[in-house]
Every structure is written in C-alpha cells, then in structure tokens.
Amino acid sequence: MTGQTGHHLHDGQLDVWVSTKGGSASAAFFEGVPVLVPAGGIDGKSACFPLVPFGNRLEFNSFNVGDEVYRFQPNSSDPLYVHGDGWLKDWAIVENSEQTVTLSLRQHPDTTTPYDYSARQRISVSDGCLSFELSVQNQSQKPLPFGLGFHPFFVRTPGVTVHANTKTFWNERTGHLPGQVCSTPTDLDFARQTTLPARFVNNAFSGWDGQATVNWPELALVADIKATSNNDVIMFYTPADRCDFFCLEPMTHLPNGHHMPDLGGLVLLEQGQQIESAFSIQFRKQQHG
Image (cartoon, rainbow, N blue to C red; front, side, top):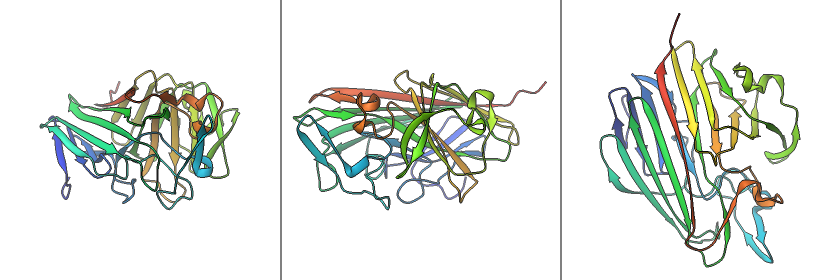
C-alpha cells in the first residue's frame, strides 16, 4: 500500500485512496490485498471513476432533443465522445473524514460538450463495505438526457468468478457500440457463476437485478455488489492485452441511449431536476466448509 496519494479512507479492513482528479478511487485494499486496481481513467491511475452525465460512447458525437442538435468533440484517444466529463475533470472536496469524502463538480458547456450540470459524489467505507453515491442536476435552461454509472476496475486472478442475473445480452458492433439483442454466449453466462473468458469483451447486459458476486478463490475473498434499482444495466469489460483486471460497471442506461427510441434508460431532466444512483461493494473473507 506504499506510494498511494490522495485522500485516505480507512475502517480497519478497507484502505481506499480518493483522488480529486476524475473524482475517482485510485486504489482499494481489503486487509492489505488489492481489490480495485489503478488501470483506467485518462492517466491510467483510476481504480473506479464516476460516469456523469452519462456513460460509454456517443455515436456520431451528437444527438438531438426535438429539433435541437447537440454536438460533441472527442474527449480522449477514442474517436467517439466517451464516459461523460466527470472522469476527466478536477472535483472539489466538500467534506471529508477518515471514512467519508464528498466531492462536487460544476460542469459548464464548453468546446467539447454542451452539457451544463452540477454533480455530487460521496465515497465511504464502513465494516469492509465501499460505497459510492452519485447525483447530477441539470443546470441548462433546456431539457437534456442524463444517466449515471460507475466504472470500477476489479483485480483479476485466474480463478475469479462472477455471478449476476441479467435478462438481455447486447452484442457489440463497430465503434464499440451496442448492436443487437442476442443469446448470451456460454462464457458470459454469469448466472452460472462462470470464470472469465480469456478474450476481449465489451458488452452490455440489461435487465440486471442490481446484485452481483465476485469470488476470488486464490485470495479467499468475496465481494457482494449491490446497486440501486435504477441501475438495471451492467457493462462487462476485459481487454485483450491485459489480464490483471476486469470491469463490471453498474449503469442507469444502455450505452448510446441517446440514439434509442426510449433513450435506453436515460432520463430527460428539466432545469433544476436531478437523478441519483448508488452502489456498494461488501468485501468479506471466503467461508470454507
């Protein structure tokens, strides 16, 4: 746990470092064992960052609300605007203690994004549980579609398993965008508490019940994940060139929801309206016998 920087949260079992850059957790250890690893964000040093005012990619770098067209510029090396603004911006610490830190972000429209909003995030630890609470309020005079999510990077071991109940699997098309509803591949059938496939994966699952379990047999650790009911989408990501992490991302909407008839779960907020989201990771020692 040496070399960590940022605000240190600890509860006797959990040690979590929070960075104002990207409003992110930069590392998390349970009883000294790394459980969230710094592998993401714009500088590759984030272990969990917020998705606000929406998550994942935006096709065409534009969308419309009625006759109004909103345009974006790419905000990373990806040709499509991705993951909103929160993961790239400097957040301000509003309150902090040994077990809790609250951060805020005020985003004004700029050359990259037309969104105008304020966001607030609370990260806390208690009895081995790491919790994230996120909210966003539309400050624009015009209604805009909003969504929230979280992008954790879980440590990956050869025998790690994931269990989650979902209803719908979306394949991936060009541009890393969701394609069509398909049958769930056998190696991504998380209802069977499967080990993770050794290949590139970047797929959305909808109809998620908001609960998942990660089991690391080599570490004798288990994580019980719970998200608020509006998080009925989960993204699963494993890169092709790394085997030290995987991502299981709770979201309130489908990727590219701006271009779906029902907005894919995005919520059209009037000025002053807000939405909230939360998820928690309860770490515990694996029970034997």
